[in-house]
Amino acid sequence: MKLRWIILAVVLLAAWYLLSPAFKVTELQETSPLEIKDAMETMDAATKEKFEDEVEAVKDVVMTMNDVMPKASIVSQGNFQARAHDVEGKALLIQTGNEYVLRFEDFETINGPDLHIYLSSELGDDDFVDLGKIKATKGNVNYEIPPGTDLKKFDNVLVWCVPFKVLFSYAVLE
Image 1 (cartoon, rainbow, N blue to C red):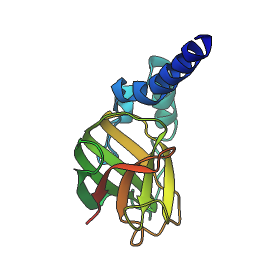
Image 2: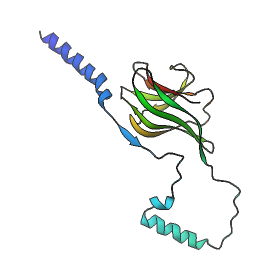
Image 3: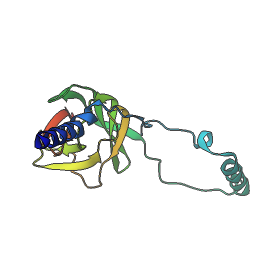
């Protein structure tokens, strides 16, 4: 009789561990690399004063710049498609200079145990680049792409459940 209670307790704990993440919604609203913000708006008073003093000190210096500030642009994008679970939103591949960011916009899915974001050559975990754990199940989120990643090869964005090897959802970047 006592053994049954122990087994039941273990089963309930395991079920809670596996199912409880599905009910946890995490929301994040990160700024898009496509938005250019005025740095003066975000400076505190002391930093702003120091900046203005330094500008005043070099106001008569003539500088020539040959470099152009890199502009962010969308390289490719795709809408998320449900596989094992419903999903909404789109994935954008954004380039700024030589750097790339994968951005989820208007993204929403359920949570799960140990979800990761993969860039993959197919809809599986045989050939992929792991961008890390999912940051949020709802919102607008950025994931940095490691330099040197072959973005022509890795054109699938996967929301992947690592322990169960389940594809939650995906987007094909076109």
